[in-house]
Amino acid sequence: MLRRSFLRSRIGIAVAVLVAALAGTAIAATAAPQKSPILPPSPLRYVSSLDLECFRTTPYTPPPLAAPIVLSHLNPVLAEQARWTIQSLGPRTQLCSPVAKNGQIPSEDVLDFVRYTDLSCYRITGPNINYPVKLSHLNPVLKDFPVRGVTLGAPEQLCVPVIKNQSVPPDEVLRFVRYIDLACFRETPQASLNTQLKLTQLNKELSDIPTTLVDVRLNRQLCVPVRKNNQEIPDDVLKIVQYIDLEKFDIAAPTPPAVQLRLRHINPLLTGLPIEPATLVGREQLAVPMAKNGQIPPG
Image 1: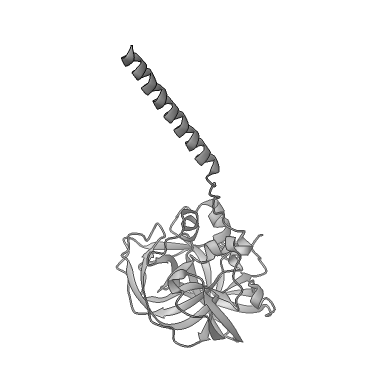
Image 2: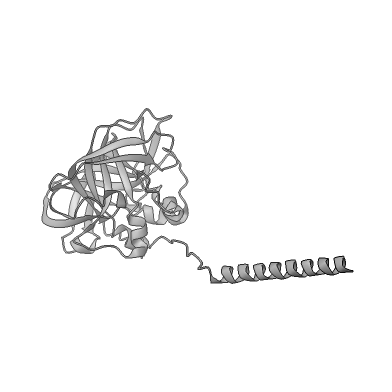
């Protein structure tokens, strides 16, 4: 009898402990905050906030590509332009990193995506398209500058998405930025923007570079979105990426402190390339968001 009573007592205690544990788990699950997904902003909100400062880097040439890459235009204005093939990526010429102009920091939901937009730029060649476009500024800081006409010539750079050091974006952001490929076309005529801007680095890997006053001078290139081969880009990502048009202007600014970085490719077509060492050795250009022929991004 004593043994049965003892066993019933032990079983009762075990049941009580289990019930308490389950209750505690339920309370904890109820109390735990649900993490909201990071949703991309509208095309207009993202593109109009995308300013990149382009730094000259130490020399580096990627190894040969496994196969040639066929590039095709994504923006509706250039959709009828012919595809062209590049056999390899030439020497890296720049690293372009996100900045804010004159202290105008994007709102947090936009900043989540802008701060991880890092592009490494390589020399390429291609046909002269001789295509005239009218450009208007999208960023509010420069919105009062007039519409200008330029003619696009031959492509000179392909700028592809990378991450700096261990600064890995959240999954939702990586899914977006990994498909930002821009072909930069020489443009004429050149005319100085003739303005000064304060640039603040937005990516944490360059947070040691202080806010700097730069002189913005001649326009050099228009960088437009392209697709590599027949790469499938998710529809919600494509709806934004196709409107990323950035015009590059020369800048004059103090030499930045030496920053050593390791760059890792994140576009699925280039992830097999090795990690690249890069040291920033000079400030060269500012890339600012534009609309072509009045085609304002939605939203």
